Image 1 (cartoon, rainbow, N blue to C red):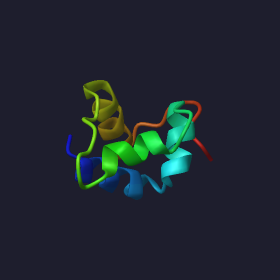
Image 2: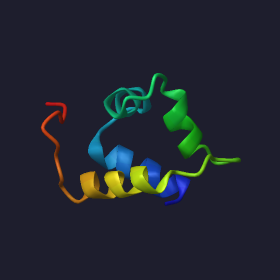
Image 3: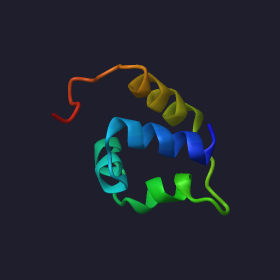
Image 4: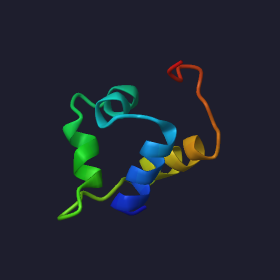
Length: 66
């Protein structure tokens, strides 16, 4: 998953970087920012990419924010 794909999914889901970071259990929104930045982005781990795709396709876990 590219940095652009990750960001596009986050935006379609209506999350801010801070909100997504908290939902995923990251301590800081900086982690999400690292995946999305244009220059030198961090690689999105395969499991996180699969989870983001599942969310984008409509999967909602029990703890999904209301």
